[in-house]
Image (tube, rainbow, N blue to C red):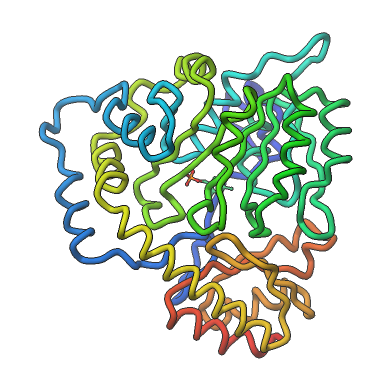
Length: 362
Ligand SMILES: *Cc1c(COP(=O)(O)O)cnc(C)c1O
């Protein structure tokens, strides 16, 4: 119940939404948020610790984020004017939705199209802006349903189509030919290809940028070991970047965030490769262990596993929670999600603990 004097001034959409809150409980093993395990070498950690101290505390950061945009451009084979940087890709998603918000033709509000299940921030961010959200279920293999998506594009006339690939929470890459069909069907919309987990995948989708004028790629440092920084970015057409940049807060990226992200991109390439390999090796070991116990993990191209359970997912999550291990499930949404859990790949010892405790739920 909202009783303060301005309650009637709130956007009506807020009544149906909840503030994002990670589980506040005390857990000894947290495998719920797709963060990287703590694999950073002491040398890399020291470099970062030194980099985050501002030369002058009284001065604003670089409002143009010049150096970091150049480093990102070099890293992603793009030009600096094709790069938009945000406080996490969450902020980039918000900026895109704020900028590309004009309803089409006689519609009252703008529409976005995405898949389900997928990353919740596309729909959350669109809903708080009063936009209409069409969610097209992934097929039985958790791949794109091209027919359903093309119909949603045709009927909904979206401003933006959001596709995460590798997808969260299902872990797989979307088939490239299907993705291309959707991009072609949505030729007058922006198709955002979210590559948050690309460091753990066999291939990336950067070539789409050069082949289609309506594609933008999202990347983040959050999943490869630097979630504390809040640094994400979009690579997209320079015209689009120029317009969306007008809704960006001038000082959205703090001095420590810009400086540390520069170190990550310029100096920690080998470190990232090592972390990536360590996570992939553990991911495959964890998947093997789960299969041996009778669970059915879906092949993953990310730093987590999407695991089919025989018992209800709720029971698995609660049993593990009672043993101080936190994983993620979306069982309140029902349907096929009632029998799936998402497990972030942790340190070897954490994965061992998980395997030991989850065996009670096989
Ligand atoms: C975690 C995640 C993000 C959020 O990244 P931030 O850069 O931390 O805001 C974006 N997209 C997907 C699919 C994610 O899973």
